[in-house]
Length: 461
Image (cartoon, rainbow, N blue to C red; front, side):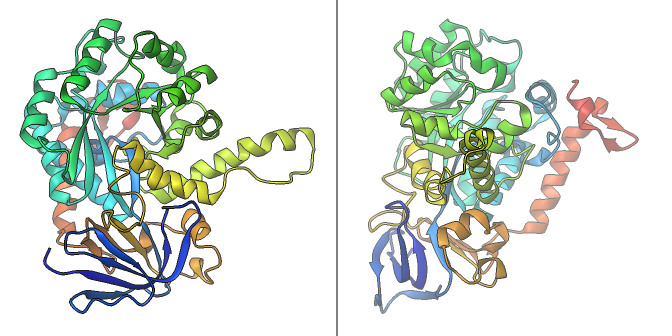
């Protein structure tokens, strides 16, 4: 970048401090892509000026767990339970993905995230059948220009007979670390997506955690999801001395209260996927229980083969469910409800700075502060749903949607301008995605009937 950019006169939600909203405020983006100044009446003679007066400006959202490769089989799992999903995807459709299909899935899914204002994505990539699949997944993230954490999760063969006796593919993880991520100071970084004690035998779990330690990588894993989550995975990790502040625990729905306390004491973080958890039978989203234990929840889209891929819908699902749970005791006893539970301010923090912290990127992104990366979203002000502007944070959580995302910046570079992704051939991408889908489905004849795809048959694969 050779020039600076000045965003002039916005209504700025900073997420630097909970509930902080700055009106008629300028943001100066430096030539290095970091925020150089925030204030009123800023001057920068060499800057490109973008008038954002009357518009909400907020930090880019952070999605802390998404199986991005599944984008090309979008919505096939919309009526599936967790058991059907494991069969339909992991022992069904996943084995037909070629490296080029993995590239297309990641490229499509990451651009979908950017288009809806998600500037940072933890890509939980667990269909890496070959090194070529891993290369394709990483390259797709790089090509989108978004900030991402590539969480190396091995291949679908690891999710067959459970508990698995197959170690995480260490050679490929080391190769990817050396080839793409020798530095942690870049736009796309690396983590390990481990199966954890719910899904592997103890010896494998020990091996996998040692690999993460050897590679100096953060860990993200599924725990507390439905039936499998009741096996005491956090207790097992504690017994083995493996709890740490470098782990993000995804779901947590069916963990015991003592296990949540263990996570809190170790400094671990958590990722909640409310849409998928409520759909597939994981259990109630753990948002409120996590807060009670002293853990800041973050948000995850999770299975984009099932539900929508934007943070706005996720925030609404999360706050609606948690408020219902918080309010239920008063409703049951007939008492007059004096105060609702979870606030929109808290939810906004979960979707931004708390998510960045869980991804290990809180020093770089997640809030609008001088010195941090300019990962910024500007919402359109032409929607009657945001008029008049009385509560900007409430407007984002309850009324905004991907169609209102007008401009998006990642590390100061504008990747969406005036409502359109910059430099993306949408028609070509759509054709490529449809071709991948057609190939994958074509390789699974039991999922078709008279030329129509029947996901319920795929789930029996």
